[in-house]
Image (cartoon, rainbow, N blue to C red; front, side):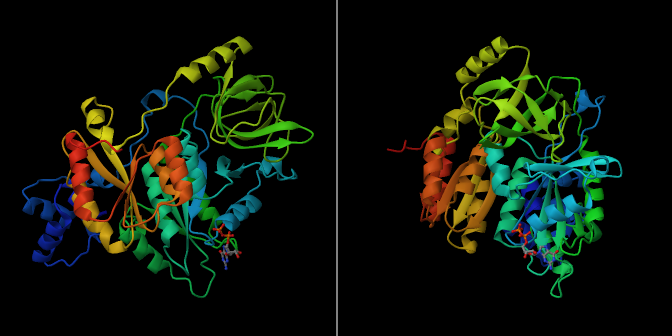
Length: 472
Ligand code: GDP
């Protein structure tokens, strides 16, 4: 078990530079991303006059919130829903294909695979649902719409290429959502494959694999040669078990739209991931801003279903219009109830977005307890000093988290992450893509741009104290 120097610094609220110096005094040379064991971490903490139990560091290190499942424990388990993420060309699509081809549901053998946006496989009698649109973009776009569809992330890293910018983005997006990550070190068939290098890079970013004493599961795979697929699937089931995913199939069905289109002959078709309860043919459903009746329903094998249980992806027909991806679905008793729910929905205001100008007020009213920042800079070297300075501004009423940092322009993806995490975006000596500006304006996301670190830090500090000038 281990912790990175950054995580340790955060846990004991010390400047990482001081922590690194202290490590050096103890004969350990480590950079901020380096991982040290708990004993060393506890020793350093003690040097700062802080007594820690390993567990305290561990929980500070994994900011993941455990799902609350006390009241759902007696309910049946449901299959996990998995999204595959990773850098372009590392093999996400091919891995999804390999899993589908090797594990067509035994009971459905002979069925014709339909691409409906998600599919289910069966492993040792247990089902796993895969969302078919890989990438953290789709994942965070769903979250930005308020939908949480994914239980587990499979992070694909090509063993010959190693961690790349989008790999890091994917890690941050998954972490921001509190979704556990399983790593598939892919393309192990290639001559240039180097799994150990990938493991080192993962450790540098706080994901220490199990055989190195950490708690990140990593599996070597070849989507091309179909190696390691079973191992990956079994590990997904293992993580699912730890996550304790329950649902109640006796309730009316609820879910989320993961794909939708207009079919010339069949009308609006929507792929819905049932998340709780059971969805049935004949159900009246409220979807997004409309309602309709489920006239027919089929699964990823093209098989007609009368009933779909939790974690099942199904195509439904019968909606009057094509719903939006990320829209929620709920079965209701009657058309009257559907209309009532829709009118209530309209009255519900969206959660206020965080902005520097309103931050103080939001903290004072207790609406905001953590400030989530997406930081983009021109060069890598600017990230650490800004991160360290910003995190030091935290008070007992507010924590400051840099949930994602990277170099380059502010992208639409960054804004999506800000929407999904109720955060704001800071660009340091970098531009903003036009799509990002548009989305930010539309969703009222604050994008702040600076060229001088001092001004950046001072502005956030002022905002925390309620001293910031409103923007003109
Ligand atoms: P994506 O962009 O992450 O979805 O990547 P793709 O699945 O499209 O794969 C990118 C390229 O890598 C394609 O040419 C694949 O055939 C190839 N590829 C994917 N997985 C493997 C693998 O395990 N081994 C080898 N040798 N090639 C692979």
